[in-house]
Amino acid sequence: MIKKEKIINIGVVGVGHLGQYHTKHFSHLKDVNLVGVFDVDRKRCGEIARKFKTKPFKSLEALLKVVDALSIVTPTPYHKDVAEICIKKGKHVFIEKPITETIKEADYLLELAEKNKTLIQVGHIERLNPALTPLSAFDINPKFIEIQRLAPYTSRGTDVPVVLDLMIHDIDLVLAFVKSPVKHIHASGVSIMTDSVDIANARIRFENGSVASITSSRVAKDRVRKMKVFQQDLYITIDFLIGLTEIYRVMDANESGSAAIMSAPIESGGKQRKIFYEKPIIKKHDALKMELQNFIDSVKGKATPIVSGQDGRDALNVAIQIHNKILEDLH
Ligand code: NAD
Image (cartoon, rainbow, N blue to C red):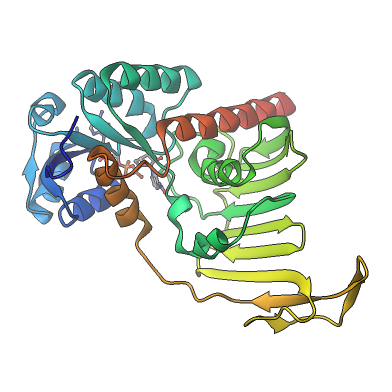
């Protein structure tokens, strides 16, 4: 058990596109000593180490000797093997999303972590998106969620299908909001640029009656990241890219608060009700920095992970079911 006052010695494994930002944040965060980085690409390893004034390690084993915890930011197909080595040495791990490629691998890591009393946190960063902050004022109990995530094509991330690369962010969000077992999944998709599925749509029905419709594409002209949440007397629309959250509520006609009136009175249950509109001011924050600080605080026992290893496994489980449905539909 790590003492709460201890400074956590940390290393980053895989310092490509995203790993460089992990390295940057760990070089500044509270209660952290960035000991070094390891990447199989020696040149990249040296460059990032120089840039953030840390040490490039020649092997994972050497790095493991001097750290308490690690961020694993390698391509997804290597998450399981790297995490396994780290956990077997009793190290806490932050694993970028998706936790692994298969459920078998995820279950293995969760079991291994429990046996070795180490923490697994998963990088489903969208949970910390500032545009979601206003939702904490409401009891979120969605009847219908619609999410769109479209991105221009880049070769990064194409080592896994679009469901495991992009849609899994939204699957994790939906599971965090709906909190009910999945009852039925309908999904279809197509491949356009790669041998794998590049555009996917899934409709998930939950046992509590909620429905989620998610569309993801990595073959789009422009980036889009939008979510709409509908529940009794409440409709919330979020644009994650520009950080815009808009809230429409049906309330008693005299209950306005700061909200603007959007409709004439509606007769409902013998009461005069109206639709009110609010656009909360969103305070910007760096979601990655916050996520990594949460990991450090969790390693120190001062917090619990916002996205646990089990959450990462649950999102992967639904993602794989969706992907399998798409493959069935295609053949
Ligand atoms: P990348 O290809 O840019 O970087 C990966 C790096 O890992 C490379 O420098 C590579 O040399 C190195 N590497 C490969 N195998 C290794 C190994 N066994 N040990 C050490 N280093 C190794 O990839 P990326 O875009 O940075 O993605 C990395 C991970 O982050 C992926 O799992 C991806 O899904 C995830 N990701 C998450 C988000 C998010 O929003 N949370 C965004 C982008 C990527």
